[in-house]
Image (cartoon, rainbow, N blue to C red; front, side):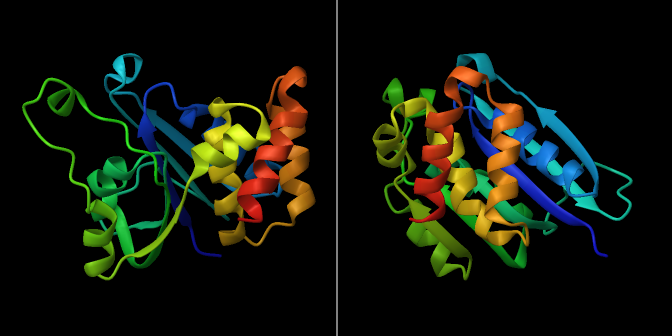
Length: 190
């Protein structure tokens, strides 16, 4: 069994750590050896956040290197571009179309690259883009973007839908379970 490498990337406060916790719990429950590593950067100030999740029969390191990621789950377009070099030739990026301006854009020192996803596709990258924010709001909370994206990304795993739902029930605080199950379903069926 080969080792599969997943990166979850975003901006601080978007819930990428909960997404990695959900994925890690699911994979352990499925019997895989799982290694997770979180890199925070300036996450509390809206900076870049990346989590590595590697799983297989036996995994020795949680770190994903350039050209090694099977899947990148990106909570924001510019973060997809920032970490695209990690993607394998036949890998896939699941990305939220939301734009969160970084500090240089906010202060007027730079412009947000509007065609960032098109540029990645022009390089031959397999991009699945969705408006996860709109789906999260439909589920009941803009904070559910992470679970919407996990729903969309779930199609890349050979793990039944009901196992994902069970992992949500084990991972998310009880008062948010139903909303998160709805968010996952909306992402899965988008």
